[in-house]
Image 1 (cartoon, rainbow, N blue to C red):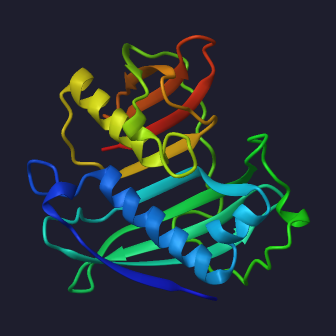
Image 2 (tube, rainbow, N blue to C red):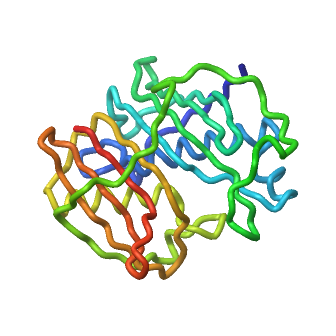
Length: 241
């Protein structure tokens, strides 16, 4: 099993007003660790560009033990944990500078073809995927499905600043929008026990989205991002408190 280890220091601009890290900032750390490790293993951006393809995050669940705060040094360990015809899985473990557990995460990734934006069959691509390690969150990370009813709705138009190197909205931006919308609708500031995000469609600059929100009796929150014009579901998030 090949494990990548990276250390990040929580900067002031990564923090909320209470000094704890923003979830979107933490997800940027995970994304960077995954990208660097994939590059190191020979199936990163450089290799995929040669075959007109790129990685996209399809599903992720983060379980928090303790939220990192300003100036904390976070060590993130990550490793591949398996793959099917369409999905490759990757795990993450986060600890602080004292070796205390902060979070663990499981994730699912797809490879899309640039010219068609369609998923590629991993069994038909010569990527030499490495031996895999154990799961951190669950052996079966089920994708979220939309709720039956939502009580609130926020609207947004995708700004250019949300577009990443692949030309679409970065996965962390959806989380930033989600938490802003939940705060506005429910005056929620935390704490968060776990967060799961499932991505259904890519979104691009100037697309118009509706963010549908709901709370449940357990105090958890559900958000569905949907295109305003054709009502296509874009992503779903569940926040456990």
